[in-house]
Structures are given as structure tokens and as C-alpha cells.
Length: 84
Image 1: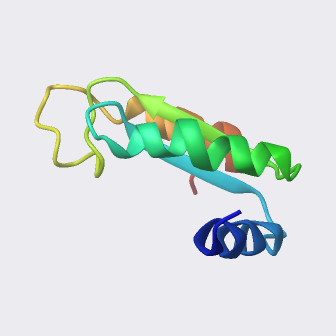
Image 2 (image 1 turned 180 degrees about the vertical axis):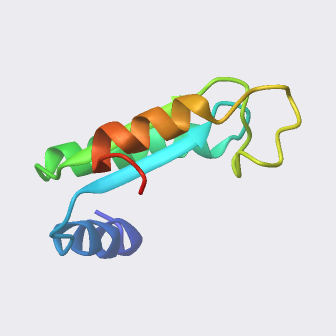
């Protein structure tokens, strides 16, 4: 196993809280998350929530696609409770 992969796995092992990964489907980062990061977190038994939002870019607000943030708000409320 390469040094970078060992360091990354050690970093993931040290996480002791829930993990929330959210991003749009327009950005290439979703491939890294879905094919590398999320499977590694699952192998380590980490509590990770992974959601991809159609029509949104990496930073959501940069998309200018007409998509709304309602699905993101709904997911956050499901994961963390209603916003106060």
C-alpha cells in the first residue's frame, strides 16, 4: 500500500464522529468520493452519510442550473434535526 493511502487510512481511522458528504453531480469530485473515499470509510465501519444532488455543482451555489437547495435542507434536517 502506498504511503499516501496509508496516511489517508490512518486519518480516516482517527475519525470518531459521523461523517456527512454532500455535493452536486456536476463536479468531478463525486467520482473520487463515490469510488474511493466512501468505500474506504465503509471498510473501516465509519458512520458516513453520502448524498449527491442532481443539477448542482461542487459548491451548490455556483450551479446556476435552476436547481433548488430544498433537497439539501431536507437531508440536513433528516441527519441533524430541524434548523432553529
